[in-house]
Length: 496
Image (cartoon, rainbow, N blue to C red; front, side):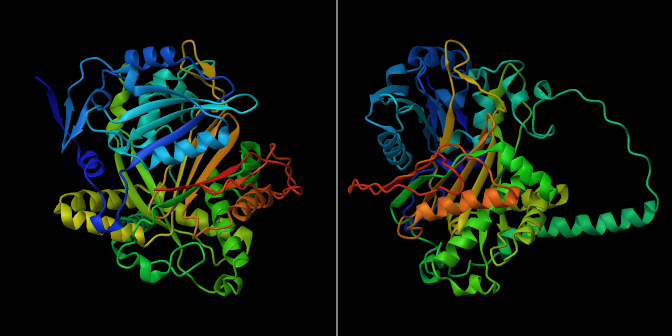
């Protein structure tokens, strides 16, 4: 008899059409390209996955309604691990973009690994394609950590995450000195309570009271976004130039903010300058506009070293962050961006956001899907930023190969920018409607220049040659990037 388990509220939402039918959205999947000079052995990865991950019900069960149903006692390697020979990195990216928009059949657990081999000098890649109901990006990173080989310590201890996020076994042991009592204790307490209440209320109402973004060259006309934006069926994959983390760290130190603040400020600057490049007079004159992004937040579940898959039960929250695109001063944008992101570090704000999420999750499904679709349609971007290991990792840990780079391939109804840091570099990808953001070479150039300018010095970047290939036409155009050096990047377009 098949073993059945009830899905969590988040899992049920992801598994059963989280969007209203009129939006014509595809199923949510987490898709990523892991780049290698030489592909790892498929049998070695299959052995490692079966040993460390298959026992988790989310990996060994089919999705049936609101349940995980275990119908396969043994892992079907021929189904879950597939090999393909492709001609180039371009073909690999085309295949990845097509796969991201394609649902897997529900008669098997909904995850696959594709081993995509290209001839030298092209890199090859392993394409990971997993249904979002399995977990969020952070949860999957934790769950798959037994497959990662690092030079020393546990893989999760090599990921620059706050101690509160990491499980106990991955935390570095440090002795904290107690803070001395401050003066004006009563006054500080009163101010702190008022500030906490205000942050709680802002967190609770942020998604409820947010309005639609202004008409800008980076989003569809407002009439198409109200009340809910319909998915156009066309998506374009852009690998933004790779940026050394040393550049980002110099910018962070220069402005005294976090790495995430710099990433968000660079994206905001590129968005502003792209809109002006496309002739937007409101931003050229620094007039007030509304431009926001959705950010996804994971509330980790405590897991142990013997069962990191518990992290797949993370609770996901979504918040709205204003992008200060109207700010013409770069340092001013960083300051405003840091202030906007500071809410996400506030316990009171997160408590309000979590309470709102818990209450809405109890609403009738028809209401919930329409509300979700309307909220997404009010934003122009979804931006994610996830860290990976600070040093090189071998994948899989036993008999694997060294991972050379990562490209997240995740589409949405609005433009999505996915950022991941790994082994001293920042890898970013953008997936957008090619009819909305139609000059991605310029956006790539502006992203690179913003990073350069934020560090306030000329930066020697990594080798770069960007091409643009619109599906079906085979045309390629080099990107002249002489001022900042050369960075890796590529642009691909797919229709769904």
